[in-house]
Every structure is written in structure tokens, then in C-alpha cells.
Image 1 (tube, rainbow, N blue to C red):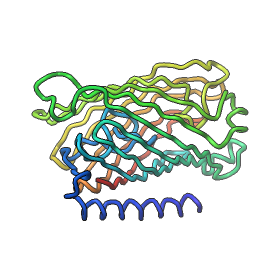
Image 2 (cartoon, rainbow, N blue to C red):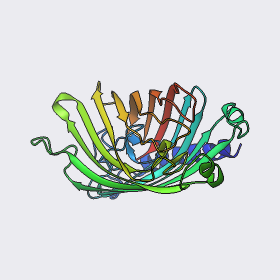
Image 3 (tube, rainbow, N blue to C red):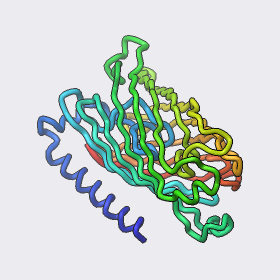
Image 4 (cartoon, rainbow, N blue to C red):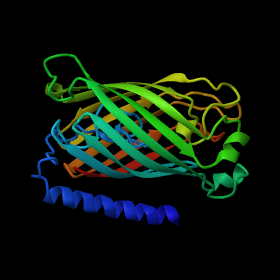
Length: 295
């Protein structure tokens, strides 16, 4: 019930943000100068990018002379679990991105089978920061230089005792990543490659490190998108994962997505998502839906 109430508050805040942005779109700092869809969407961890993979994009439609911001809510429903997250991000002068996301991983009826109780929920806070280092997604069309950014995500999970019980070393940890994103405007194609250093089990929802290993592992995230129109992009993502816990194998994730920008203030995303095995339950596939509002 708390999650639902908070989701309603976020949705109302997002709507208010979109209306306020529209009313003040001519203000100096709210310049909204980027091309449609070139800010990416909000990932499940709050950074701008695809649904599963972080990109080198900076949140918001601001250029180097302005600021931008987004609020989002994302819902993932697979065979035995659901994930709901909501949060906000701000982009500063197309250079720095700051983000916060609250994730709620609901075990539903599966929680009882795992001995945790029906609808047992893991809550996680994700604090993110990203800096664009070199390149420009739109304006560097005459070279092969991509936009490159480096980021960090600090994650805090509230289920310390359960995480230790399943073999996790810690309920909090940090991911570090470098992303390279290239837009081929003439071909209507966007490509991203991300290298992430992480100890996270299921992106931190089952803690960090494990009885098998507690070392940072380099993991890959890749995305390809094709712009069918200036409002609609379709594509796919792939994300590799570490396998730190003996009690449950951890698989790589992938999805097929479509993102539609109604305008620069509101966009929706839908995806078929395959998350493999999670906490001994196999073939976790289903859908992802996300709403993002901002400027």
C-alpha cells in the first residue's frame, strides 16, 4: 500500500513537472535544445539510457547552457516476481547527471515458497552520478567519436539479514561504469556499449558479493536502437551479470523495447524482458513498462 501511495505521488509530481516545464519552456535555463529521444529513457536504476542498460546520455533535454530533469516510474512483471521503481534525475548543462531511484522487488506468492512470506519485498535505494567526458551524441556526426561518460551508482538494500542468510557479503555497494554511445543520425541508429564494475547480485536486489566470490567483476551492457520516426525508437539490450551466490545461478538479462516520445515532456516505454533464473526460479520473462515526464 505504501508503494502504491508513493507511486501516485510520483505520478502526480511527474505530471506537475511536465506542465511546469511546458509553461516555462522559453526560460533561459530550460532551453530543451536536444533532439527528441536523445536523452534516452530512465533505466531501472535511474540513470539515463535504455531500460536495462546505462548509456553515456545525460538526463533532460538541456544543452550546454541549461538544466533538465525527469521523473519516472517503471514496472517489471515476470513469471514469479515484480519490480516497481520510481525516481528522479537532473541534468546540468549536458555535462553532469544526478539521479535517485527507489526500487521495490516483490516476491509475491514466490516469497512463501522461499520461506520469506507472501509478498515479501526487498527495497533498494540507488543514488547515481554521471559525467560526460568527451563527445556529443548529436553534433559529432562527422567523426566516429561517440559520447563517452563515466558514472557511479551507490545502492543500499534494506534486507540485511536475508542477504547475509543467502550468502551475500553486504547489503550495500557501489557500481562503477563507463559508457560510449553513438548516434548515426543519417542512418537513424543509436548504439551503446557500457563496461560496468560490480559486485551486485541481481543488480543489488540480493545484495553484493557472495560465498563464491567477493571481487569486482567487469560486466558488459549493450544496446542498439533504430528510430522508426522522430518520435519512436525500437531496439534491444543485453546485460551480463556476475554469479556470486552458490544457492542460485544468476543469468544475463536481455530485452526488446519500443520507446515513444509524445513530446519533450512525456514518453512511454514498453519491452519484452527476459531475466533468466532468479533465486532458484527459472525462466523469468515478462514485460517492462515505463512512464517518464520532464523537460
